[in-house]
Image (cartoon, rainbow, N blue to C red):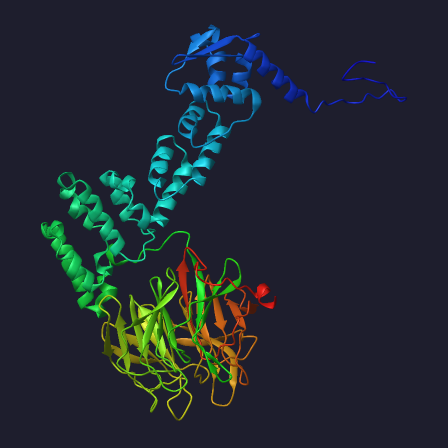
Length: 591
């Protein structure tokens, strides 16, 4: 009998293979002990004033750098002593140890020396572990430093992640010492990015001024180049007049004056915004944000709701968010940038002219300037950053009037009236025009549709729908105007049709699974979502979504609350749900 690996013959004469699971481990432990005692070592690495003894074969087997050094015709291949430069002695010692043990601890104390050393020796596993550690340490105060470090050492994944982190946390990053020390080119790169995550352009303007003032004599000449990347047209008029126009650093340069004039012109001619657009009028869109659907207000049975809930597509869950200050059913809801607007509606006793906006960052509602007219059952839509409100009911009559709100100047302005009075109308934006669809004119339910051109301030009739529809859901998807459900005067509908602006024709598509009117329809992630409403006898909390590729409607997760006469809009959010909201989910409501 032999110790360890015994070999026996069985009756058939076949051999049995033996595999010692611990052989590699035990051998390397033994070699490491020999290394520590200086036994059979054939190489001494000299670095700074340190000497590290090792075995060439072990180093060459795991480091392509040492492999090349010891096997090529380099003079080192025959030497027993090699001096290394540009590598930290501690890091080298840890990496040699790693070659024998396959274990290394990466932490705050050694990552900055270990990563370049692992790169030099081409120990990619250790290099990746360093990158992974740095990734876990990203914070507004250090992310620019980590990004620079990743760039210097060609860690492309870490560089990408750190850069994305900088963009997503720009507001905090712009207040750090690291930001103040950035060279001009890097500041320009950041502030010209479409993916900068800022609640408003004011943050970008403030960041630029802080950076310039950090070294005013050395940097004041860069102000025009920096201001070209700040999207001045997206600042409010108040901010432009009281902060930008009064800033001496800006006033000093004629190029900056031109940029200020461009911004004010954009403000003064809202109807020309489609024509005046350029890179400075484009809203920034944060990378990594996902669409969240908000259902606002509405009514059920004898109640009118002020509460709101939001649906997160990533988790397929509804969350309650902050309630409005006013209960609103028959409300118009739309999104501009990263804010949600609830416009008009009915509070149970009167029709409303009031407006409030929701900020997902603070999870709170703020009052905005009221409309010129009370409107419930109105249609709202957004075009070129302007909020349009059309038709509706003022408590006495059906309306054909329309008005437009500009968040940059906080003003409502009347626009041309529609040719038809429309209550229970819905409005959508397609190819630079507004479409007012169907409704009720106080005597009949309408199949007519009219289209508004902001440049000429005129409404023109387009082809009639296939059905009369009031309180329908209206939304645009892939260049088509969809109208779903509604009421034709005799019953609640589940039929759906879509309008092709190129041919000025309507065609039917698959009907919804449930009859709905007073619901709302929105496009999100390439689907249409029909939310809540009334099926002719009761308020609904059900949702269904339409896939234009398969021409089918399927059920989606239900809301907590039944909501007829509801308003719905979508915001692109990076962080959801808001920290101060109760994260209710369908499974947790039945505790």
